[in-house]
Length: 413
Image 1: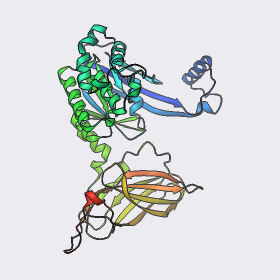
Image 2: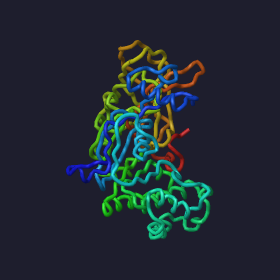
Image 3: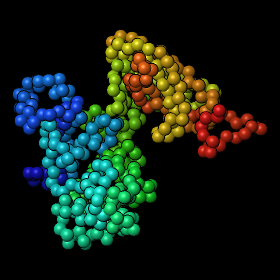
């Protein structure tokens, strides 16, 4: 990277980067064909054959600068382009457009066991990773005991890593990345595999190496608590575009939609949609608990007023409302079938009466999903957003059994 006097602290510069993938089966194209297609693309010409027109843009027009010692969180829904960006920075793949300038060595953990040879022992993989990063054998030997101690796998350090569990992989891989001389450390959700105690240990170590050693950390996670705990800056990606670059608090608010939400109303038009949605025919724009001062329910049902916009002709669209105690797995779902049909440009309103009579007292999250059925009665999700929270607080009647939600669950059959 060529630097001038004004950017001496910049270790990573991403300049208008884009990445395209050609969808479809593996072809028998030769190197000559690949060069031909690239030349034609630069000249603005189309490719021969249907396959070469199926291009998926994973990233488009992303630009940012990262300074030495920064801990940067990278968040966004599935399919937003987070892992693609890290692969470009790690030089696993090359950008289709733009350029990436790196000043220093990069150590990356993009998935469990990245860079490990399964047939080699843990100890041998430490030497292998160190050599890849340009360290001498003497430099590795000076740090190897610290690496093994931190990894908590000393008992198995001379065992081939193909026999390690995923948690052991993560512990050793993180320990190697944290102790070897890299200037930029990249972590992609891999800490989720390790146990909670080791996760806290890793977060503490990353903070330490950023502040005391001046190393840069790029951290991808869907766990907003760990992002807040570690990072001092955060970027939000959405469908391959850089949506936000700034404070962690503002980024997480944008990601969770908190700026557009009260206890009783939610502006769904501002929400980031998940990347896995394959359709964009209809969108939810608004949801509201009408006539309520708050989101506390003391009865057996709650009415949800919704507004929607139709982007493509739709027929027999239903709405699915899912209840979560946390964001991991729904414990109750109600389906409202065949309630929306319409043409392009139309909008409408609908009111749903959600039955919560079997749900015990507690605070719950909701997700709203617009769906339709294909000819085989398989549900196709057309829109999905996190909805309004619900607090169920019915008065406990004397002489009745007090429900223990932590032991017996949320639903009373």
